[in-house]
Image 1 (tube, rainbow, N blue to C red):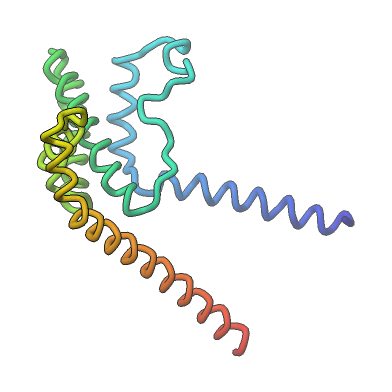
Image 2: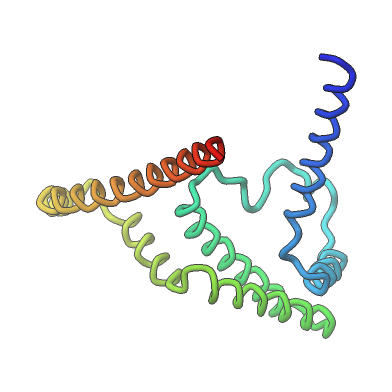
Length: 180
């Protein structure tokens, strides 16, 4: 690789990294960042605790449809954390910051994420609590299996077709741009 190619590649890499990092924070207002900074100072923990290798919310490897549900639950957990923090502080500035951040999370949830999270959580907890070793449950599960399997297959096909259609659209757009 010649020097010019390396320079161009290095420039592209730096530009990509800079744009990627700047876009990551484009939705967070200065006011939100300011409130979070105040809260971080007030609720300071040691670097050992902060960087112990166990994030509260680990990175996910899910698809967009799954991420939407997951993000709704993550935001709900944040609301719970901030509510606990509100109940434990008497500092008026912290109360205002916590209320501001909670309000922003609630707005985000209301407008862009699933509003039925409590209902979904209850449903999931009920599913996880099913006694799989109970013979009555096993018998009922067998009688319901074909219906559930059909629904799951239909849903899987729907997502596959949606993904396939997106791929076909991208291919058509690429072909169209090469022709013109």
